[in-house]
View (cartoon, rainbow, N blue to C red):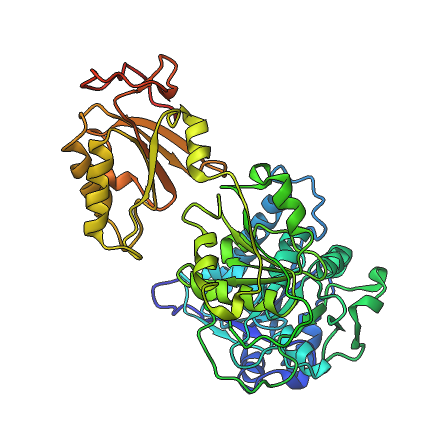
Length: 524
């Protein structure tokens, strides 16, 4: 490009789902005025995008056909499929850069919307920083499919989730179970797995299949009736949220909707289940069996996500600070005759939902609801086991959260535990809104404990990326501690072996006046 040549302008133009009449006026104008039209095709060389826009293309326009080198994932490229596709986008971008550098207007045609699972976006990533660029939106295939099926997807406060059919079946089933309306794209060869995910999430019966929405060969039928061998890539599955308006106020969706329960012949037992601190290996067989027997699971979102989806199971997720509302919702379900489990991470009775359920159950209307708590492996047990045996003697458990109790009460209890020389397990040590409390707690403990008191920091124990650090009270860095951590502060009887294991003697030497720690190495 010479110094006197102005760079051309790049347009990513959405063509809509296939019907040329759904092309916007702006897109039609730009296509007719373009110096260069670019469009993708499979290895066969036929471009669906060009066929949609064919009636708008001017004579003499320069055309750039961008042919994918591979479409199925099988390739001899040394970088595999991802490497082959990355090289293709690099080469395609440089082909268009030649035109832009010469001052030509380049229009890239894209089915649907350019930035909604559109191939244009990869050219945009490479060229937008170098040349003037504009994106013209188009009608998405999801919008076209919903219109073709006359299926209102979401109403009022419903949540719509767009999902690629390429997700693993368990993950797809989980997301389907946790949303109101959903649209699943990228079908074709993924259809059998998608249908299985719909069945697992209990949404197969209501799912609608739309093939080639707005095109001549459009088909609409229930997903359960679709022949998997006939499904093309250009198809969408829809599962709607509310299918009719409801006479209810718009409320805070982070809180479960608590309604007056209907009359029931039988009140069912309400289970409160501890899931353990991490994955299924921490789940007791009693809890696992109970979760297969209930029809409703209620809890904080990340804990509900750990319960496998299955047909007939209703999952009710809510935020992290509405425990009593959540408990009332579960009690109402049980009172109406439903089989319900409230779930907590770790042990439900240790800073978990069990206490909130019993608090809510003080209301006389729940007097007939039996409540049974199923224990789980607690976070303090998990961290202690990883460290060795730091809670082998007397120990106390505290939460540093001041959401439900004032900080001055926490200060008094910290001082009392430290003065009593108890091992201390600390839950909820820090959060985004509580960034100073670990430092404050450290200062209080140091008034009563030696500087070389053993401290264990367990982070995400049982989960990917878990870590365990052994340090001292003096060297404890409050900045390194967050909500994913649990701390264990040792007592005088707590020591560290030469291999780094932390343990606390069961017996107490009444003459002991200092720390019994020895040298150790940190354990990553």
